[in-house]
Length: 424
Image 1: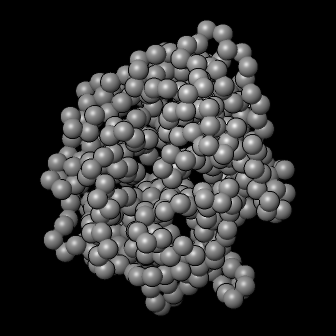
Image 2: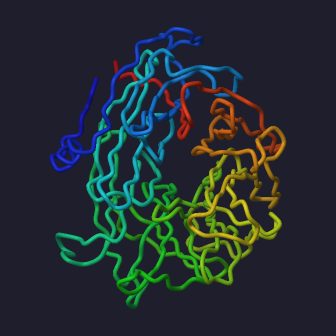
């Protein structure tokens, strides 16, 4: 069942930028095929290039942790012309793959499992204003586009556009404009990075502040978090002076650094970019609290021996996977960050992921990590090997080799999906 989005402007943009797709029916040489039993499966995306065109192969497998080799001929594989750069999920109902286009219209796709467990590309869409950051809360997946000129009641003023995908309404997209001029007062213009569920149909998002035509960052020694309702209206503003702004960076892309533990407490991380005196670390907003917890501060930079963090994921309980920059004391939006650590937030225990995982010096690239079933999964590429998924045990911070894919150059995305009874 293919439910294409009905927004005409998005479809017009998609006609120019869409990722063409077809089914790959050559199934020779593979094991562990898609079966007809209704059970959860893991999503994998592999990419390859012929020098001029990039191809993405998406597939649903039964196990990521088993040390096996599959290929692009895997049963049910969907081949796309083009590539995706960021991956979002809200539970296991749907997976969203989006291609970041530096402020230009951003094409993407929605993947789900059918009632029989077959992978389906359900919807294609285009975010007409692009996006800077993605995340999920309640039954929504949200993409935020910052620095936009608003229409309607705030016509001509600066703001951000939130694209809200409603997973309970055929993945329909609704746009909400949020005025960001003077968001915390004065002439400062806000932008938003990251999404975390705040309960009661609200979400947390980090607020970054800038002034002037060049968007020069301001307030580098303070951190702001906004609680927003489902229509992207401000409910409460949180501020603290122990960290700088929250949000990872790679050129103009922004990565959320806000995530919940299994009890619904929200940890807010910060890299400590630019001319700040603050270290790379984390603060805590306890469930339903009206302010940051004054008693909690985790100096991650000190615990790591001087390294700064870029991305964060909750693994299980209060264990988090951190993507760390490779050089101590050095951080910009373009340098490499391909080493990983596991932290337990309650005890502030920091462990590097070393055993069983390729050394930084051996890595060609890593993909977008994924967490499920109490484990973290990281794809890695090393010379003369097939791209491979490594499974991280948070209790020991050790890795073991899982599934590999031949015929691709990287595995940029992973996820987990459950069969949907309304999809054939």
